[in-house]
Length: 182
Image 1 (cartoon, rainbow, N blue to C red):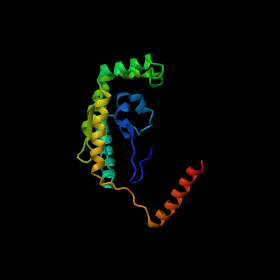
Image 2: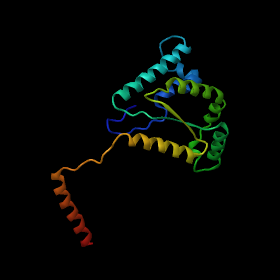
Image 3: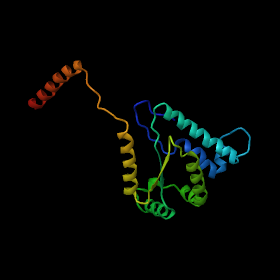
Image 4: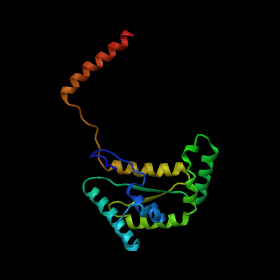
C-alpha cells in the first residue's frame, strides 16, 4: 500500500507481483478486478511485466535499493510443512484448507513464477532465487545479500548536536541520581 520514506527500509511479501502470479493461475480472481475488456493473452501479461519493470526502475532512479528474493521450496518440502502445521496446534493458525487447492495447481504456479522471474529480473532489480527447503540456508543467503547491500550504502551513525550533548549530560546525571536514591 505504501513505500517506505527515504532513508527507511520496507519489506513486502509479494506486493505487486501478486498481479502476475495468483491472478494468472486463478483467472477468476483476475476477472473480479473489473478490468477493461480485452484478451488476457501473452501481450496482456507482457504489459504487466513491463509496468513492474518501469515501476522498479523509477524507484531505483530515485535512490531506492530494490532487493527481490524468491524463496523456492520443493513440492515435497511444502507437503512436509503443511503436515507440520496440521499436526502442531501451535502452528495450525498458519494452515488454510485452500492451501490444498492451490497446491494442486503446483505446475501452473511454477510456470507463472518462472515467467514472472524471467520477465522482471533486470539489471537494476534482479531476482535472487533462494533455495529454501532448509530455513537456515535460506536465512543465511538472504542475510548475506542484505548485509552486502547495506554495506554498499555507506551508512553512518547520526551525529548529535553540541546543544543536545549538554542536555544529555543533565539527563545522565538525573538517571544516575535516581539509581542512587533507590
